[in-house]
Amino acid sequence: MNIVIMGPPGVGKGTQSHGLEEKWGMVHISTGDILRMAIRGESELGTKVQEVMNLGDLVPDELMMEVIKERLSQGDLENGWLLDGFPRTAVQASAFILMLEEIGQTIDAVLVVRAPAEEIVRRLNGRITCRACNEVMNLVGFASTAPKFCPFCGASEDSKRGKPALYQRADDKEETIRHRLEVFRKKTLPAAWLLEEKYPLYEIDGLGTPEEVARRISEVLQ
Image (cartoon, rainbow, N blue to C red; front, side, top):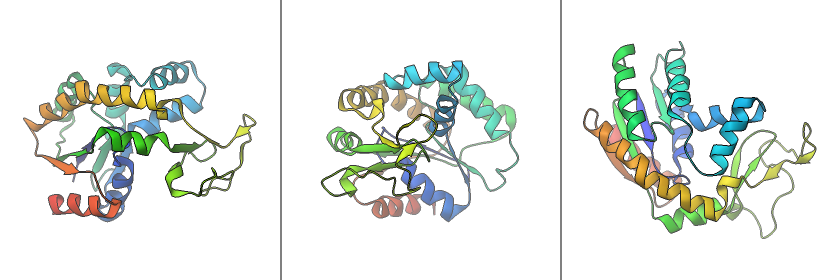
């Protein structure tokens, strides 16, 4: 199957994507990870991407279309793909539909995961990232004091930059989170409704445990 998973930041798209990849065998393609790799490379392009992401705004369409087309043309997608974080605008959705027709592919399901804004702010405002392994975690899952070592890779410091491994990204602070939620409402939801005109779309309740959300998604896909 080829699947697009959409939803506001912090709704659990990444967690659900990893579970779907394991269960159904498709390749998880996260545009966020691709863009963060550009940032870590500290190239001129990476600097521009970082400036945009820190403000909570969207990366230019030309860059995203180039990234997506190249990825979907690679040879490791025999069992299908799961696209996470794209399209984010109606313009991207229109171009994506044309691109899929051009390369002879389609979408079997568009999944839109939803949750109340205050729940998303609560989740993201406690989120931290590891500079060493790029894993994301939430302080809600730890004791009252923030961890000093990454529970995934054990790093305490980013050896390249000499900074603590664990940090809060600028786009995970409350003011930026609320801006990102507004961007999703105004720009990304219209992209979902545009995809719905051509492909099956299912809205998924994102509240509850990851297992409960995964069960709702599985019921749709089965």
